[in-house]
Image (tube, rainbow, N blue to C red):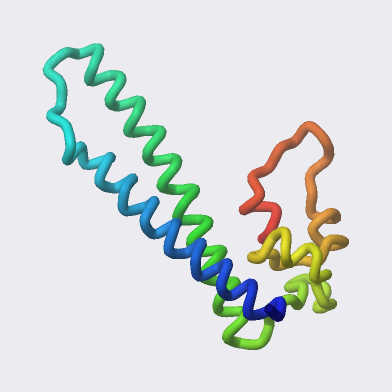
Amino acid sequence: MALLEHTQTVLTRRHRELTRRIQALERDRRHTDAAVSADSADRAAERENDEVLDRLADATLVEIEQVQRALERIRSGRFGICERCERPIDELRLRAVPDATRCSVCAAAAMPPPGNAVPRAVQEQ
C-alpha cells in the first residue's frame, strides 16, 4: 500500500478511535452511570476524577485536531511537506508520526533544551 493511502487509513482509523474516546470521556464526566455520592470524601475524589477526565478530554481534542489537520493536508496535496522549511518529510518519520507537520531537522530545532519537557502537540506546531 502506498504511503499516502496507508497514512490516510491510519489517520481515519485513529480519528474514529479518538472520537469514541471523547464520547466515552464526556459520558463519564456527566456521571451518567453512577449517582453522585453524598459523602464529602467521595465527592472530593469524584472532583479529582473529573479533573483527570477533563485533562484527558483536552488532550484527546488536541490529537483529534492534529489528525484532522493531517487528513486535510492529504486532501490538499500538502501532506509530507514540512510546514517550516517546505522540504519533504522523510517517509520513515511519516510512518512513525503520521500527523507530523515538520521534517526531522525542523522538529529537532524546535525541541526545548533537555530537562524542559514540552508535550508533543506543542512540539509539532
